[in-house]
Length: 585
Image (tube, rainbow, N blue to C red; front, side, top):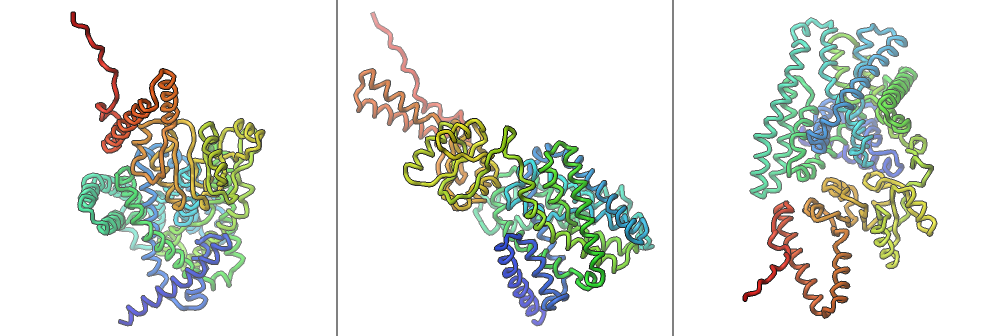
């Protein structure tokens, strides 16, 4: 009973402090991560001492990282992941290797550690905080952009690199107990076998399970099955001594192209948010303030050196891979901190008798301090890092101006929509990527901002969070169901309207949260036919009957096509050419 009471008390205090600090830090624009870290430090044993046992809470909270990687896996189906292989194996490998060696060299030159200890500390410090970076990319809408995919490619390779890092630390171990551990090549075989087993389980066990639950219509069972999938994949990896987050990521990838992806995301997201917050609270509780107080210059200097080295190296690698210098700088600063897996590897190095417990505490403080600096670095360099607005000269990017509607695409279709809205006294923010169109519109007194309206971060910049309507009026077939879902998730209060290229686009967007989808030539074709029929001498009643017949056939045909998901069905609803009659002699 006492233990139960203690858990309730700890939960009450942790959530209360987290709520207060995160609200304040959000209000100040400093982000939730820093609020969680500081709340943990204040409520933990180093300051107020209200809550203890940070190690146990960290073990539970690491499930948040596992759930985060599962959700990211759901965003990346195998074909898309295969397209990222150059960034994963190129950018990721270079970043981990070069940063690890450079940081180890810094430690070796500035301290009295042996080269083995310097390497055991430098390698973990090359890893960045997946738990911090991915939510930042998600909240800004940049995870699915080329920039976000490159950042994720590096983070994914970092997660994969934990296995060889543990192998290297074990090989350098001075602890006789490690001599009987499995060799590195066996760990690689374990990893590949585990991934193959998860892929097979996803295809032959998990998908049929979700299909069965879907047929039963049991909503709560989806939650249970989703959590079971994550926990089971993580448990398999943990049993083999591998990365639990990697197992959850593989499970997510295997379900990325399933019809249950959005349901799984909705079910898992609340657990991910709570556990990830608890993770940062536990990290804040573990922050050794006494170690920092005893050697503040060492911790601050080491954290500054870590950030400078990683930012500079990642910037250089990004430039080598063809990134613009602003994007490369943003990538370097975003990944400049130490990561949560550093704590795991420091403990591994301590058990291998390569570093003393005091060193593990000091460098744990370095990691935490570097994580705390990331929001400040991103805020301080926001204007400096902003991408050039256009290659053909400076153009102003979108700004939130309190408009009720955002119109993306200011061509002929978008202009018509905008004029109707303005005629109804509805303020509009207009966005387009066509420089010539923007300049022409400016000549007529229309303010059109430059930007790619298919980016969530740019829509947010244009004020979509406050808008009641978002219109996608671009030419061609550019709007995918996944994008509509992402826009609705980011801006749930806004109704979404889409200009569709043809009925195939209508079929593809079935079931998505759109207010309306309008075929771009439908109404103009009907109007031209009405004018022609009137000129041919038909009465208005006859013209109305022809239009009603066409619309009824088209509506029924489209309904059947949407249900079947195939544009080739319902051909009998097409109005065909009448057969010529033959004269009988």
